[in-house]
Amino acid sequence: MAVPPTFTGFHTRAVHAGARPDPQTGSRAMPIHQTTSYVFEDAESAAAYFNLQEYGNTYSRIMNPTVAAFEERVANLEGGVGGVAFASGLAAQNAALFTLLEPGDHVLASAALYGGSVTQFKHVLRKMSVELDFVDPDDLQAWQKGIKSNTKLCFGETIGNPSGCIFDIEAIAEIAHAAGVPLMIDNTFATPYLCQPLKFGADIVVHSATKFMGGHGTSIGGVVVESGEFDWSNGRFPVIAEPSPAYHGLKFHETFGTFGYLMKLRSETLRDLGACMSPFNAFMLAQGIETLPLRMRQHVSNAKAVAAHLQQCDAVTAVHYAGLDGSRYADLVAKYLPEGPGAVFCFDLAGGRQAGIKFIENLSLFSHLANVGDAKSLVIHPATTTHRQLNDTELAASGIGPGTIRVSIGIEDAQDLIADIDYALAQLTEIKA
Ligand code: PLP
Image 1 (cartoon, rainbow, N blue to C red):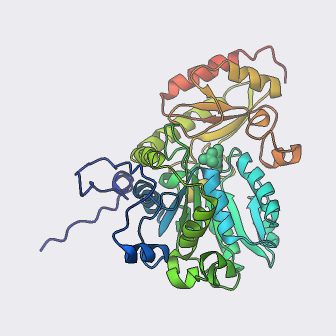
Image 2 (image 1 turned 45 degrees about the vertical axis):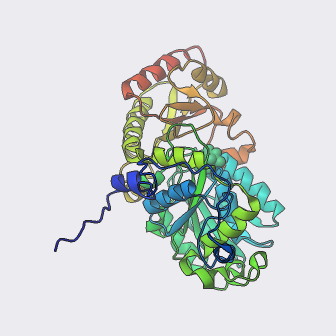
Image 3 (image 1 turned 120 degrees about the vertical axis):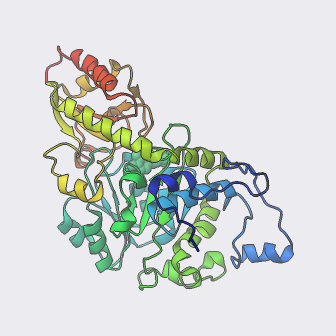
């Protein structure tokens, strides 16, 4: 007898994972369960849900069927055991950290992170009395040396925002694991279509789904996915392995095994910090993911064309796109991002700050705004906007100069993007370097 096929292709999963036709109405599109709460079948099942003896909907701050469909879709594409969605990428990151850190712990993070993440790490961790060190993401010895007896987490971005550096996930996962420490990766710029960090040994992946995942610049959201393979009972994480005072003495790792971290993330952290994703945003983001592979291919192909063109322009002193021939990251791109290192990158204008401002003002197809990963092409001057909270040393560590421009290349026609850039560059002639 013929065995029914299993559908494993990435494109197929992007369209179908997490969702199925609604059994009650037949609705083919994912229904939006715009409800705060759920009627219990009886008193016994209500008690079982609250005791975590059975998995069921109680209240939409903690779980919701539309949000669950989004979580399952992302977890499936990342190759994780599950996911928990949040109101934004930073809410997801904050919750992921909060779940495993205690006062006195230490975090080792890449110095080349999104400016908002640097600010979050510095100030939220200080308020939690958690020590923090930033290290050069390319310096493996610095990672090795940076791990201390109280280190609980290593953290980096697959593709650094905005420097475009490529994180050596496998090498840093090995260093972290040798010390019994997990590696968390922000995979926002790559998306699971270009890279799946869990395959290379990362333990937790976080996303700002606001960007390429949603893809249309309509909805803010974030998500945390776990591999389920990290041994939280290795002695370093009593916070997950030992009885939890926040859940009447429950031992999350022992009780839920591979789901221990995620269960704690949902049933304690999401419950207590409360930054849940709205069902409507879950619908919008899951809808966006249906076309993720198609969009990412066009984003990358356009980014390669625009970066190659910029390299030829006199007003441009450097183009920091790891997809260009001769990039110092070529080997890491071949290993982790064989289809290309995304579509967000920076370039430096010879005329510094003044040229940066004038260039942006003369673009018309590119939108000047603080976002990336939209179908539309976007541009910003990081030193005066997204990264203005950072001091000069931190700016330099993030690979940013006064004339640096960050672009997020959309899915329009490459020749139109190049025409827009050429016009804006031509207006810089009187500005001297
Ligand atoms: N991670 C990266 C790499 C980002 O670029 C951003 C936002 O720009 C975030 C996280 C934060 O995401 P959100 O704006 O959804 O909170």
